Length: 83
Length: 208
Ligand SMILES: [Zn+2]
Image 1: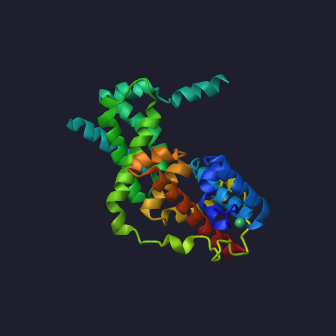
Image 2: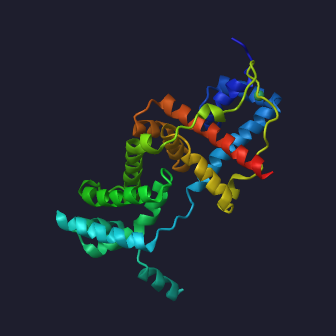
Image 3: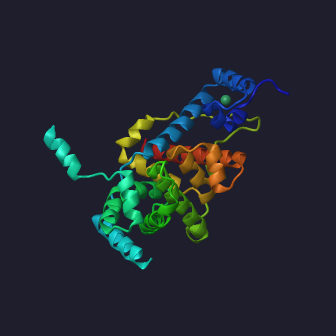
C-alpha cells in the first residue's frame, strides 16, 4: 500500500476527517498530505465553510403570514370538532 | 422591570402541560395559542425541505393536525418541541418522497464535483473562500443563494444534507430516519456539500 494519500483520497475522507471519525493512522496520513498541499488546505477550508454556512441557516427567522395563521387556526378547530 | 415581565406574561407562552391538556380536551382557545406559538418555528423547519410556499403550508397544516391527533401518544416526561419537530421533519420527508418525480428536474451532481488530475491531484487553481460562515446571517443574498443551491439538490441528497448540516442530526440517526445504510447517508451528505461548494463558488466568481 502506498504510504501517501493523493488529493482525491483526502477529499473523499473530508467529512470523517472533520468529525474526527477516522482511524488515527488514516487521520495522520491526511494531516501529512495537508501539511504539504496548500490547495487541499484551501479546499478543506471551503468545504468546512460551506457546511458551517448551512448550519447558520438554522437560525434564520421566517415570517408566517397572519392570514395563514388564521387559516390554520380555523382549520384545526374545525378538524377537532369532527372527532 | 415590572412592566416588562407583565408584558411577557400577557404574550403568554403556554407551558407544555397546558398545551398537552388543552389539545387533548380539544380546547379551542389552546388550539389558537398552539398555532400562534409553534407554527412559525415549524414552518422554518419545513422550509428547509421545500421552498415552495404552498407545499410548505400544506405540510405545516398537516403537521399541526398530526400533533393534535397524536397528542395522546406523547410521553409526558419528554420534551414536546423535539417531538413536534420530528413530526414536521417526517412529514416533509414523506411529502418530498411522494412528489419528487413530479417537480424535480434532475441535477447531475457530477457536474458539480471537484476536478482531479489522473493521478488524483486537485486541479489548480483552488478557489479561496471569500467569506466567513457567519456572514451569511447578515448577507441575505448569500443566504438565498445557499437556499437555492440546497433546493436544487435532488431529494436523495437534499434531505441528508438538511438533516446533517441544518438540523445537526448525527449520521446514524439520519440513516435510520431515511432507511439508508450509514455509509450511504454519509456519502450523500458529503456529495451534497461538494455540490453546494461548487455552486457557491460559481456565485462568488460571478460576483467578482
Ligand atoms: Zn492535496
